[in-house]
Structures are given as structure tokens and as C-alpha cells.
Length: 477
Ligand code: UD1
Ligand code: CA
Image (cartoon, rainbow, N blue to C red; front, side, top):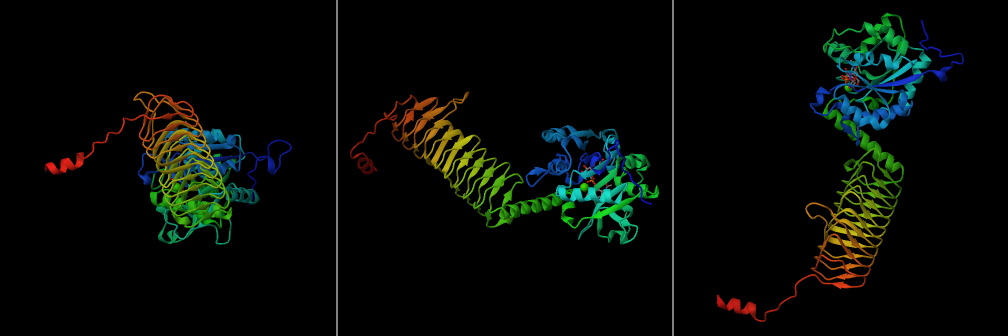
């Protein structure tokens, strides 16, 4: 007996006018992680578990139709995901996955169908979700679940079909309640579902808490609907890896590894060379243009963007940086929130802190630290230097050991260095101070006053030479 759960909305109703929502269950504590941080905020591939799931949902429906059920540390989860524009439903007490949907009843009242996703299973793709939705509609089911065959099904609920070849499901049995024979079954419940909203809420009241955890299991709805002679079907995905849940730290590591390898493969397909991809940590949102080479043991994090024909050598950690074309980053650079112009040369061992703006063709060398500064086109700071709160023009040479003394213990001050200035080695520039265009600073100077254009400033005591002094000292012994 097939029964259509679809509620036609209005006279012009068609499959296209079905009102579809996505509910994401994200209220659980994640006891198995032994963490202060709520489970769905743990990161894989550079984003929170829940962020990945929300992004997949947003490829299916607009944000106004996505409902995230939050509970444990609800405010923290809400704050972390507010930027996505989705709705939140509060499950104040977490009494199971079935209960998570009980509390969403009012929010979902205006919809015909709801896709239910797990906030802790971030590998799911929009393609698989759409396939599940289409399968549900073709089968005219009350409940459709996504199943998968896993090598190691331990920990997951098992799907009991009416018969081996039937798409219809008898029930789902949770691992803890499974018999030894059932535990051997490898077809598992992924925790992704589509429901007819009407059928869901007509029967959800029949769930009980008579189980190992004393919770309302959403999975029990399969048996409940089945007994009410409603159609419950399973759609088996060929992409089993997409259903993995991050319940333990080991599972999180496994998901993270899969995600990062997939990211590396995507970059390689797009024309980026990665010599030893398994050693690179590249976040989901990183963009790299073709013919750029990433050497082994590099971390590219956050919203980093790298242009074409660049080379990032080993052991660099780069977060939220904008890097133009043809940049060479030598080994061991640590960079965050910096902008690098085309053809610039960095490292080895440069430390670029937020708001560093390195001009086209500029050089920043070893043990140079920069912060909130601009280095103009073709300027060079090659060794052992701190440049903070500074505006440095084009064609400037900053000698080894130059320090901008930007902090007076209370306030930060700016150092301005105009085009073509030459700063000799071991100079300290006490801000606020300005070096005029083309000026020279003698090596070892402490500069406390502005230097006019084309002038030479010497800010050190004169050298004294005492002839024969050393010999006389030795002879005294
Ligand atoms: C669940 C399924 C299991 C399936 C597995 C797939 C149940 C009873 N079991 O088990 O059949 O194989 O997913 O990954 O559903 N949550 C809430 N409120 C709650 C409890 C949980 O929102 O009161 C959320 C969690 O934050 C999580 C999701 O629901 O994101 C799933 O809960 P979890 O405890 O991880 O279920 P599993 O044990 O993995
Ligand atoms: Ca889970």
C-alpha cells in the first residue's frame, strides 16, 4: 500500500511547490569526546563540524528554511553559526534524536517535507542529500533513510529491511540493542533522513524511552511508522565515506584526514602542484591558482588565497593571507593576515603578523618580524629586523638589525620611511619619527628626530681609538 504523504499546497500544487525544510540535529554534548567544547564545534578540515553540514544544507534550501536544533552550550553554538543566517530551535534538555525533532514541531509546521541531517557528520554532500530527497519523493514514503555499507559498522544503527531486495525497512536497531547476528550486518543507518512532516508528527508521540540510554530515538520511528502501515524506505548510498560521524577524537582525525586529502586532490585537479599531499594541512576555504607549487609540510589555513606561479617551501604556516602571483616563500615562514604583492620574496623564517602589506617585488628575509606595516615596491628588509606600525615607501633598504621602537609603554606610534631611504644596520627608529625621501641613516644610529629629505643622520657616539692599549694590558699580567 503506497500512500502519498505529500500535502498539496494550493491549487497549482506540483512536486516543485513542495515546501521543504532542512533540520540539523546539533544539540548533543558529545560525551565521547571528553571535551568542554560542544561536539558540533570541533573542527575538521579547518571548519566546525556543524559549519560543513550547514553549508551542505544551504546548497539545498535557503537559510530561512534551515533549522538547527541546539541545546548543549546552545548560546555558544548559536554565536559560532550566526553568520550563516539559519534558524535555531532550542532543545533545552537533550533527551535523544527523536526528542530533537519533537521540539522542532512548531518550527516545521508550515512544511510538507523535512530533510534531517546530523550536525556531527560533515562529509555529506549536497548531491547525496538531493538524491535522498528525490528517492523519498519517487517512493512516496513517510520516512526515507540514507543507509550505507561500512567495512566496520560498529557503533552505528543497523537497517533491517523487509527482505534483502526490498527498499522497504522493517526497523532500525541501535548497536547496543543489536543481537550478535544483527551486529554482523553491515548496512548502517547514516542518521540522514527525509520525512513527510505530517506523518512525522502524527507518530512521533509513540516514541518511548525504553532503551539503553533512556532517550527518545528518532530511529525507532522506522518501526513505529511501519507498524502504522506507513511506507519506510532506505536509500543506500554508494559513497559510504560520506556518512562518517565524528563521535570520538579518533573519528574526528579520520574525517579530518579524508577532508584534507579531498581538498588536496581538488587543488591538484585545478592545476596546483603538491609534492607530498599527505603532509600538507590545507583548510577547506583556501584558494590557490594554477602552477603554484606547495612543498611538503606546509599549512595553509583559514581564508588564505595564493596566486599563480608561486612556490611555498616546506614548513610554512600561513593563515588568512592574500598572496599575489609569482611569490616565493622560502622555508619556515609564519604568516597571518598579511598581503603579499606579486613577485615578492619572503623568508626563510620570516614572521609576518596581521596587517603586514608587502609590496610588489619586495624582500623580507630571515628573522624579520612585521606587524601593521606597509613595505613599498621593491623595498628590502633582509635580516634580523622588527618593523611594526610603519609606512615604508618604495626602493627602501632596511639594514640588518633595524628596529622600529613603536611602543612607549602606553601607546603605539608610527614610523614613516619615504621612498629611497637607506637605513644602516643596527639602527633603532624611535617612533613617532619620519625619514624623508632619499635620506641616509648611519649604521648603529638611534634616531629620535625626523630626518629631512636627502640628509644623513648619525645618531651614535664617536669612536675613540687608544693606540697600544691592548698590548699594555696584556703586558701587565
Ligand atoms: C545516531 C543514530 C544511529 C546512526 C548514527 C549515524 C539514533 C538513536 N541513532 O547515533 O542509528 O547510525 O546516528 O551517525 O538516532 N542530538 C540532538 N539532541 C539529542 C541527542 C542528539 O540534537 O538529544 C544530535 C547530536 O548533537 C548529533 C546527532 O543528534 O549531532 C546524532 O546524535 P548522536 O548521539 O551522535 O547519535 P549516534 O549515537 O551517532
Ligand atoms: Ca553521531
